[in-house]
Length: 251
Image (cartoon, rainbow, N blue to C red):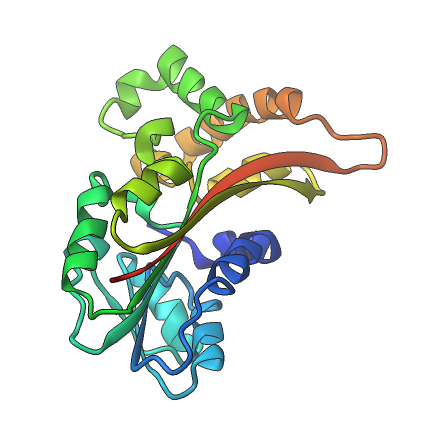
C-alpha cells in the first residue's frame, strides 16, 4: 500500500526530475496526454497546465494514490502500467519514477512505440541508485536477520532499470534523448534517508510486516543509514541520488 502523505514529505526533491523530464518534450498541441503512475496527482496537474487543450488520462496501481489524485481534481483511475494500451489520439506519454517497478518494461516500451501514432512522445524517468548504500544496506539487513519473514518480498536491484544507452537502444528508430543526473539532495531532520526510502523502496517490506515488526526493522536499519549518510556539522544530510531519463519521439 502506498502512503500519499509519506510520499509527499519530499515533494520538492521528487518533483524536480519530473520538470526536467517534461521540459524535453517538444509537443505543442497534443490531443491526449497520459500520466502513467500518476501518484497523488500533484505533478499530473502540471501536465494539464502545460497542455490545457489536451485530454488528460491518469492511472496508478495504488487506490490510495488514485484517491489522492482525485481529491486534487484529477480524473485518475486504478490501472496496471504494464497492461495499458494507447488510444489512437495519444500524443504524449509520461511515466515518472514508475517503470522500475515493472519487470520486463523494455518490452512494454517497445509495444508503446509500435502502437502510438507517428510523432508521439514517450518521456520516462527512473531512479538509478539501486546499488547505493540506501538500498544495499536494506538488502544486507534483510539477508542477515529478516529473510525468514521477508523471503517472498522482492527488493529492487540495479538491473531493475537500464542505462541511458540501454534506453536509447530500446527506442531504436525513434528520435531519442537519453541522459542521467546524480542529484546531491540536501536533507534535514532525524533519519532523513530512512524517511525517504520509507515512502518508496521500503514499501514492499512495510506491506509484509506487522506494526511491531516494522518498527523493529526501521530501528535496525536507521543506524546503518546514519553511518552511510552522516549528519554534517550544520545539521544537513547529503543524499546522492542518480536518476535516468529518456525522451523518445516515434518515427
